[in-house]
Length: 598
Image 1 (tube, one colour):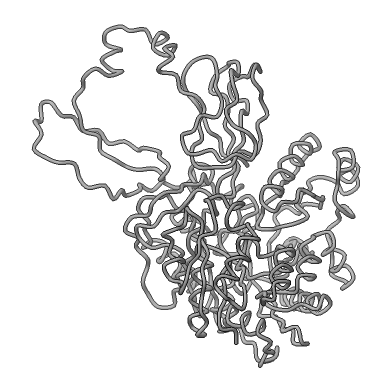
Image 2: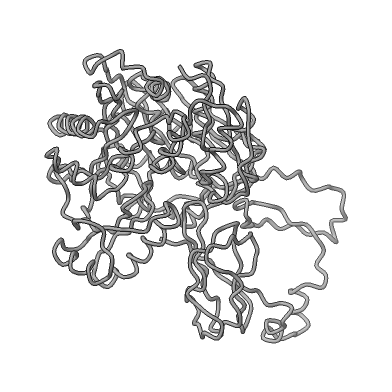
């Protein structure tokens, strides 16, 4: 067994890996950015080293700095977790080249299966059905138009590298193709450093089903059952469960066999996942991709099989072989997971970074809680919005569902808006209960507007009492801040305000034209500038895009709040824009608007 491992990640997964290492007597070394200096994974590790500034490109994606920490800390191996560098073949090769053990597949395997076009060819050689699509990356709009004409609409533009729903856009008609290509290429470049995309036919009302595989690299290859991940928004998973419900046994058996066949054909080692799209209308499946890493949803598989995937990743990396075969894998009961993210479903899943107050976690039997924060911790705007997962096990699916609904009801994270109330609503929908849902159900049927928005509880102390009642007024308001939406009480006297100004007859137009009162478009949170489609001197209309930002795996479109002329552009592509920073200077009146990107 390895004696020391550097965890090249952050947040919930870093906490999970550190705890697994400690359970095996392995010294766990953490790394962190300036934004994560006080994070839970740093507090739990045996040692922790600073990588650099908050942006991931300068810290968690800085391969040279991570390798330097490995040398300084004297570790034997590196576990990348999921996301960040987990499927970066160059990083894996650099770790191995430094004489260290990479806890994961061989670098060549990561490179081969990380290129989705190459992975499609590998699946085809294993006689696994594929969706019609381009033979390789499309490098221009005319090339994409030719492929689109062959495979038909709707189709999906997909990043050739990476995963997690990044760099994917559904195109339903030809006029949307140009913009979808630009968005997917831009998002893929920002997330994975590669902008190549390809096209694939889109299957409406499909289910997303995946198979967990485990291989020791020495001939032992097994599957640990399947999972359903069909509850998604913008191709990013929200709810996962194991095993996949209401799946015909013939399809289930074929999926599992195909996953093992593919893993064996590429000489796979470690834990991995083969993902499929199931056309529920025809009960036919298609290969999507293979993820050469641990999955966010690995916990539900662990709950129904009793197999610790992280422990086996570490054992296999140390040269051990599987001590059990397929016949000894037993699926018991059912498990469902809800991803808890600092997002506001009622505002297009807008990221809501901030500081968590007195975190209240649910208690009860057969619950598993994987969190990367404790009460008082910050959720930075620089990284993924997910900060925890709640999983429930039951003897059957309905028991697990009811247990998870109860757990989500008991969960509270004051200070940030979270996805928990919305996901509780999803779990109570008849289509989910009766397994009639699909990957588009969130957008088509389960709109957050259909349920009452919960009131966020603030940790702020109550206002002092004893003020003269005749001079103090109280007003309850909802205030949108970088920490989410706060329900607060405002106390004060009515003095020289906009209300009194209006009472004196001051014309509104005059007030708005006052330069000191103008409001320019600003960054709503710490974010990265990914596109600036305007220049000084451009005339823009209300609603035109001025700047596109990226924060917490989501694009934010900053739009023109009024018809105006761009006086100056104050940011550049690639620059980090701090919350509240002015982005563009406009002529005209006050006001600004932020629209979450799709």
